[in-house]
Structure formats: structure tokens, C-alpha cells
Image 1: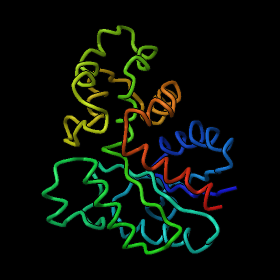
Image 2 (image 1 turned 90 degrees about the vertical axis):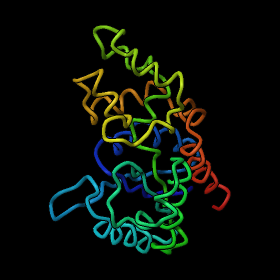
Image 3 (image 1 turned 90 degrees about the horizontal axis):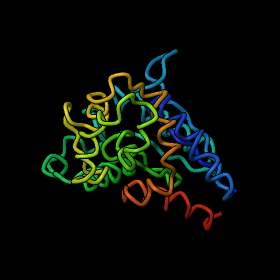
Length: 219
């Protein structure tokens, strides 16, 4: 049995873990415990400053050395004090996957615990939903409204949809589906798509899942 504490940004990611990842991996003997980051006393969710997140990661790593700790953070809009964010290497990198890998390596060095597995979503949670645009159809009155999403998906893989404030995955969805509620629609659409389809279309996400699955061999 492998236990994994998964630090997430908010309720959307928590629901994604509880409704999709947890039942999928429990059958394989890997058990997730999602934990929403604390931003201030009494408040949870979001990541305004890395300085507030680091102690939470370190505490989880120290309190249960027999378990593993990982993250489900968006590459999009990471705070400026995130490890490596101001590095010229990062600033000069255009490929999202390479950007995530660089920052994950910097995060691993900054945390420094052997039971920590850094992970960033390229570029944000909603990128996973672009794996299958048809999954949005039950939430629209007119499926033709989804054509802009289909057009992007026909030319761009989900993890290559960029992180501009105007064209990030979530912004594109809100443009065609003004009633989209991240915490409600996001996890439901993700469950309809399924984990296997996501890992086929999102190589960086798939690499993280492979690292999680490798924990079975360690134990």
C-alpha cells in the first residue's frame, strides 16, 4: 500500500482527486489524501505567495516519512516567488512542458525531501478538459457554441494551449460557456473524459501519473 498526500490549489482540484484519481488508484493500492493549500488563517485555496506554501509542503513531508507528498498546481499564474520563476532559463523557455519540468526541478531542490514529488499542470487544470470537447455538450444549449474550442483542439494539443490571460484554457472555456463554474463543471467533465484519455493526450500529466504508479514498486 502506498499513501500519497496531494496538495492542491482549490476545491476543483480536490474534487478531481476525490472523484477520479482516488477510486482509480485505490484499486492499485495507492491511496490519495487531497489537501487544499492554506493561504491565511481560516482561508484555503489559491496560491498568492510560494512563501506560504513551502512550510505546508515541508510539514507534510516531515510528519509522515513513510508516505509521499506531491502537488497539483497550475503552471499558469504561479506567484513570482516560486522557485525558478525569475530565472533566465525559465523566462527564455517557450515550451510549456519544459517550463514545468524546470520549475518542478527547482521546487524539488527547494523542498529537499526525498519523499516529495513535485508536479505542475501544463498550463492549468482546464487543459485536461480539452482532451475531449464533446464532454462539454451536455452543458450547452447549442453545441455550435463549442466550435471555437474544437478549432483550437484540432490544431493544438491540450498541454500546448498557452497561458495568456486571454487565451488560457479556462479563459477560452468561459468565452463560449459563460455559465462555466470551475468547481462544479470542471470535475464532472473530467470524470466524463476519464483518466486514460487524459494521459494519452497530455504527456506531462502522464509522466506524473507514472511516477505515482512507480511507488507501488518501491513499497
